[in-house]
Image 1: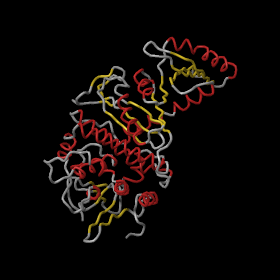
Image 2: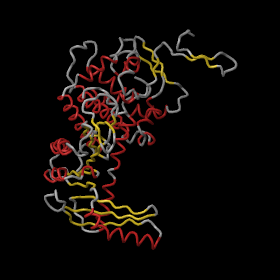
Image 3: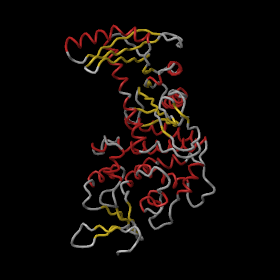
Image 4: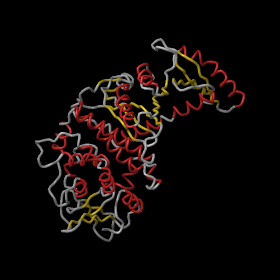
Length: 452
């Protein structure tokens, strides 16, 4: 039925009929692809366990903490990174189903209610959520290794700048980035791509500020689950500082950290660079040479092994250093360990997916604790999506896909929702080309082909 409204659009390009576009007043959603993810959530009791660490808000009797958590968690996955969109989404039939309400039930929580929910979190809630991230990471590892934790694993540390544009608490000016910002840190595991730990930090701290305590938090829980598990730690030169070496050595961790160059290191590695330049001039082909040596900076308590990579190509020379406590007995060992170290670049991709794919940099609350909670909520949403993305039964194109691709190929699909006395039917367009992927993902998460 055509209704004259202020939001109605007339498009005159179609010659045979008048063409109007308007919003449909019925039960239609643009996010039906969230339903299979909600089914995975139910399988793992993911949001239920996450909500267990929250304190019930006695001032919101109409909306439970689990319901509001699911609004925010799935809103992040569907690219509604802020609370404002939920003033409209509170009547969305798919979001009602996700929150365990029927499409014709009362509306979900509004933006002011969700904002109070976010700002009511306590320090205890943050610790409980961090523990949840680590526990679900252990579950991911067991699932990947036939129910057992592996003999060894790698933890990647990474930090990123998060520009701020308001009056957020502890937003400070960082001279290197030349902006007011936060400076969050994350610890992730590369084979599952699970983020075990994320922490919000003031904007002007050192890149490794508090990283020793953060690492200790994760290591303690890994060792509680398996006392003899081998743990290797990787981080760029921002983490190549004495307190990180000390915490690793005190906890029997191996490590590979980038090491910032100085005149003394450059002098020790200059013969390597000279060899690379001479070989390039002789062959015209890129040269990549390695060496290793014992080195002790003035702030170090003892000597450590440093690997140097000297490179020469058409663009010039490149010299890089890595400090490690792994045994290095030859140039081949040095090259192998350096190549393993640079694989930590995948952790930068995880932060890219968090920031640009799931808008984890949208930390616009005034309270620092509320913004910390927002960061953890975005991280939990990332881990839930990644749990599904890492399954071998999911189509290969989705397993390697960014969160934005998951939206365009699975989450963002329009559907009509019809509620009757006995069932709810979600009808997706028959011409939608990504139905095969949707079907596979839904069956993977527990759907029953053909109905009950």
